Length: 254
Image: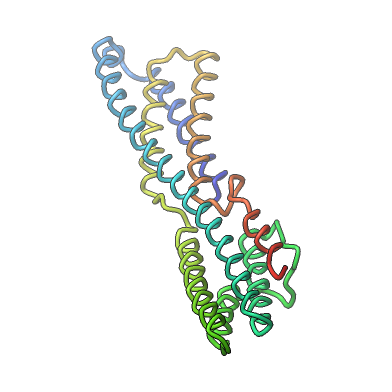
């Protein structure tokens, strides 16, 4: 489900709750709308509002942590790729095949994660198997036959870097689906709806009140929209830039 759909659902629920509250105002007996009742409902909505603010803060923190972790992981991955290419370049001509495979795997990764931002080196022949390409780099590095102690040390370093790249890649893919569960969103929408319904219940039915409740619903839905966008950093409008991998690709095989 896209962030726009989630935001639209939140807006419909919250503004619908406000309208329902305004409609109930005309059907409830007067004794249910007296000052004592209003005080109790205000206290109840204050508790719900406090809990909503706390949970909303947790959601923002979790989504922002996911976004920053993925962004830092991508930067680390890009640096490791360039470092691996430099190590293989120092190894000598025997590692040229591994460097070419590494370059193709980076280009495939860019086109797979950011299909609207293709790399300069487009792959051919249909869908690419990015994970297979990275595994091929590992196999090719292991298959190298060092002739000197320097090459032997470089091979060991390259193998360690490939392992680090593999761990970082799978960590990025494992968190690609987001960290916030659906029940959190459902609870937040329910609390938002209750608060807006309480506002509508005791608000005079005029155009200014409707406009205020409309703006309030828009703000709440936009907050959930932003949280959903941050929680899925490789999709939607707010997404991590492919610049680190693009820059790494330009540095390969120089």
